[in-house]
Image (cartoon, rainbow, N blue to C red; front, top):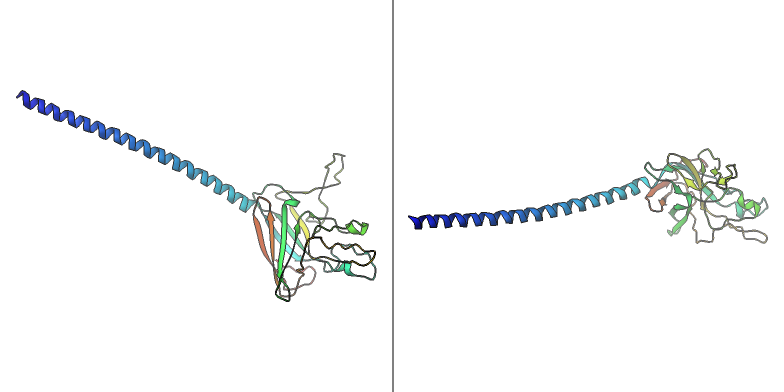
Length: 249
């Protein structure tokens, strides 16, 4: 009788030890699982935050084009000297009306770059480019020839200059190079440069290897606009008419 009770006690002891081992194992498994779940959750959160940030930059940090049309097709930068040589009047332009996309932060005009690509008659790719920080029309009538840009300066949508009081003299007479969300702007882009190089003349053809993508009836040119650290806007310029003022987007 006593021996049977001892056997029963041993059995119960073995069962208890086994249960304790299983319990400890379950705790360890739960701890490992919890650690994995926490690490996975943190990683997913980091990925989601990064994706959200990238999406914000891609969607918000870009330019939205409101309208575009064929601009001046003769001396669009207004630098003609009025003599018989008209090479300084051969530059042509298109004009864009644009704003920063919703969610964008303020950016500098110099941080916005553009390029237009097209095919010439020989099937070769031509490209012109610049930034949205340019120069005022008629600037080089004063002999100050801009040779490093292919666009006029960004202005307000009504054509007035963007000015601010940068030198704190109490007058808003300094060039404002900041683009702000919820504001609409206008910029004129050269599709070709003028290149008067005769004696006594100063060519304003940019010193970069620019091509030529002038408006041609029934052609389509590719326009890219990019913001540093932001997104890129791509549009097709469709020339169903090359008359000045004809819409191309």
